[in-house]
Image (cartoon, rainbow over all chains, first blue to last red; front, side):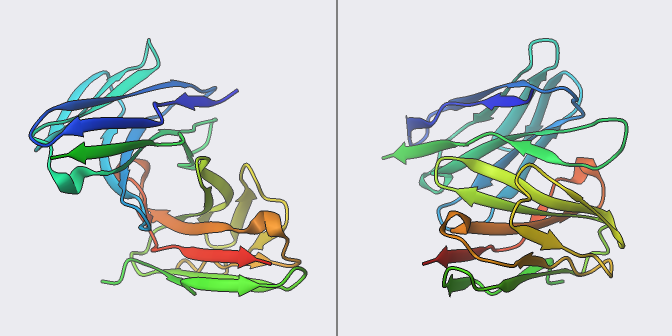
Length: 113
Length: 112
């Protein structure tokens, strides 16, 4: 089966650091993605991990451990505009490159002053 | 460069009516997808296409149909609208898997 778990909601303070976790169980794995989605808008691509380790992009970093089926998104120096839903997605792979993504239900992050 | 364009942005349908959600991309992406997003349920894959002339079902295809006659266009057809199809629909495309998807702005559909 396929299952992706992430916390439903998180709250953090402006200027702080927050870590959003994602665990997954999929029958095929070929990469993990993080997307940001502001209310009423489309998701936008944040990061991609296919190998174990940390990928850093400015204030955002993403980590992957394939053996543990675990990833996290780290947001530093939080700003009010970071209030959004963060979606974890796993790329499904079954002997053919369809590039299908399986999405978690998202973590709604509220940044408070 | 328009990216992925979806029309319409909003639509109200009556039960049993039909409609087509349009999706066009100008990035020459081979891979295209239709997802629906319900509150608290995440994005669910309806149909996808790996290239012109090739389509396949995703997780929740019942009540929908697609076609892919060109690389640019990937319309989604609802034949007999039902209240369960009330949702926000997103079209997305990608060149390769590592690039991530580019999403359209979405179509908010209400069936009454």
